[in-house]
Image 1: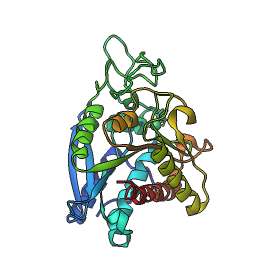
Image 2: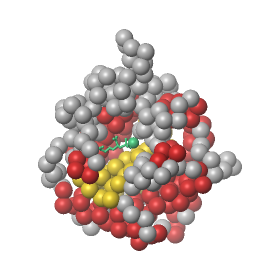
Image 3: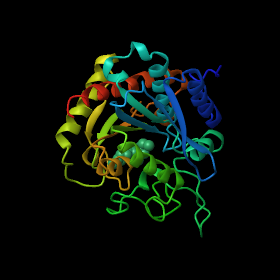
Length: 305
Ligand code: 0X9
Ligand code: ZN
């Protein structure tokens, strides 16, 4: 069996073991692949849930680009757990999707946050000519990389975007995977973060709306409504540039411009009471809330294609 991971935040090893466990125990539903290796040579894994129908559309879920946002990582694991273990109870619009889930995009950073510095955000890359380490994976993508001057070009800063776009193995792993998944009918992606209770969509670096603004706004609003109906918790939906702050080289902007028009960041619980230090007692309910959101997304994307 697998260790209980719902009462304590899992280590990198437990995340990997849990993905192995699901793959072993639900072989007709789950496939696992290593999509790349981190800078420190940890496997970056993706688990795909599918009933095998070649007509299925796909949804890509990513979490853990930011090391300290632990509740985002466990939310992806809870989603995997529920969809896999209760697959037959899911509505048709969940069962007819291929779910591609990358729970831990930045294993090096997460391990460092777990062991040494709880508030570490970036990966752990060595940068030449400085003792400072790490690149912000969510500033390292190729769309509007470092254009507005809001990323930082100083490796000692938290928002350091790297020496050039896609300089990091974690970013390259996701880029290659997204390019491959587009050919496998993936039409939506959600990048989980914490915290703030926000549902955000592109652009992050441009002040004007995306061409898909109307459908993105409507769908983000649907996810917001689904969470509110579920247990009365308020999320705010909006275009990223207005809703929080501009950011460059962001994963969802690159994914959106690459052709996956439904691209969202969800900043999960809470609004700052616990912040990054969400107690593990909330792992399950915070994850359920994210499942509600992506379930609604699965319903909505059947409408507009
Ligand atoms: O800044 C980020 O990378 C994300 N927020 S976090 O607090 N989790 O670091 C948000 C990314 C979405 N885009 C913008 N911030 N504009
Ligand atoms: Zn984040």
